[in-house]
Image 1 (cartoon, rainbow, N blue to C red):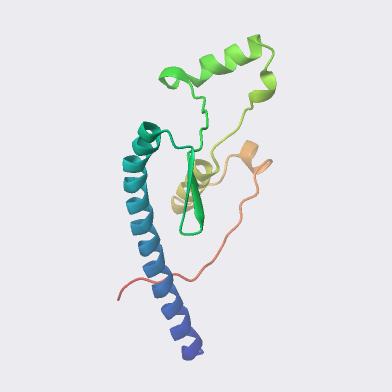
Image 2: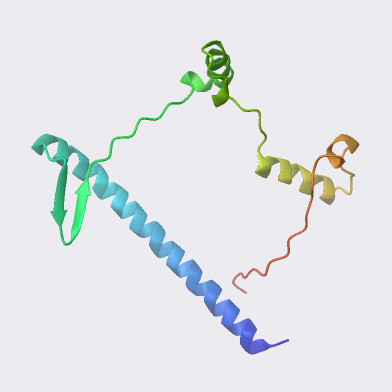
Length: 131
């Protein structure tokens, strides 16, 4: 085992974790400032302001979501409105993978119908944790 490479890997992992924590802190502070600044833009009627070589502006974006979380009703309404192209049947890859891992832990086989359509792969990665 090349311990110098292993030490470098551990150092890089530690640095990555530190940087991710710093990014999380920065994002939280920026979100807090955004909530205080948005009303100021509105009250003062600004669309954009240039400061320190950056242009800060308010972006307006509309988002649609199912009322009361009723996705089935939205799918039905979209199809009735001839907007069925927006409807797709899918599955959650993370949940399905968790199910496959559970079967593996319990040493149970994948149901034959799933064996025909799923590709299950093993991925190995090095991870670190405090000793």
